[in-house]
Amino acid sequence: MKNILFNLKKFLANKNTVTVLGVVIAILVLYAGYSYRVQQAIQPKPMPYALKTIQPRTKITEDMIGYTDVPPAMIKGSVITSSNLIVGKYSNYNTLIPEGSLFYTDTIISAADLPDSSLVNIEDGYVPYSLPVDVKSSYGNSIFPGNYIDIYFKALDANGKIMIGKLVENVKVLDVKDSSGKHVFENTDEDRISSSIIFAVPEEMHLLLRKAYYLQNSATIQAEVIPVPNTKSYSGVVGAITYSNQFLKDFIEVQTATVPEDQLPDVTDNTTTTSTDTTITVQ
Image 1 (cartoon, helix red, strand yellow):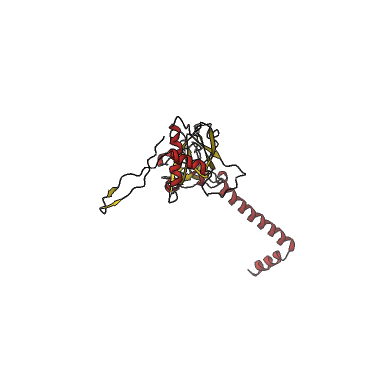
Image 2 (tube, one colour):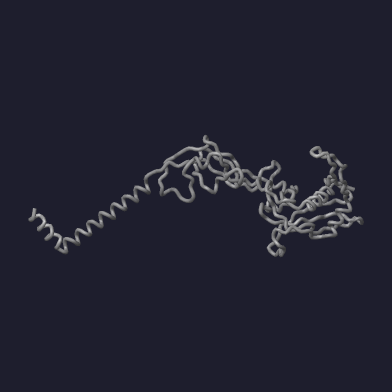
């Protein structure tokens, strides 16, 4: 036993031996680490994927999801690794999920995050308004949700002369839909044409815009409501919706009438209240 220990000490006392032994150990450690990393990179993991093409704003159910083994090295970005985080959610409004695609966090949203929820969360005192448009008046489908627009008014005055000017400015577009009520700018394989621009304005302004729009039915006035995108040179305060032309506002008010409804009893407390709802008369 003593001889074995003596020979071992003598062996380790040799600098060349220690150097070679150190190199061998370092190589073994590097090889083990490399092998571990390679296995981690090539060992497939089960990942959920779309069994069929999922259109925007579609509720995702279990029968739309399959599993396939994917090497971790091929998984890039914010991939969702569990179907529990997918089932019951919706494909994003601007996202088409192709058949065979993995699911990513930015392609899946909850029902509360769908764009139409913005119509529910409109500020107090504001009213949604849907302005009819076509390809020409939407500048060739160039007015997007989130854009700010000005609204112009065109009509004939009492002398039959054309007058036109900016009526309201700095209105934020909430949505743009086609004639079927579908969102125009969803990422879809359908070609959709703008049919209505949706925004929200204070109640007084909402009534004025409706009066202006209904004046289009007058043969003598020939009114027209025109949306115009804000330009980069616009200097107003973003978010501050304002009247731009008092003359046009007064003209519209003169051409229409506000008629309060009859007093109606309140069945909850047997008191009488006066409604301020408005009926618009076109002259």
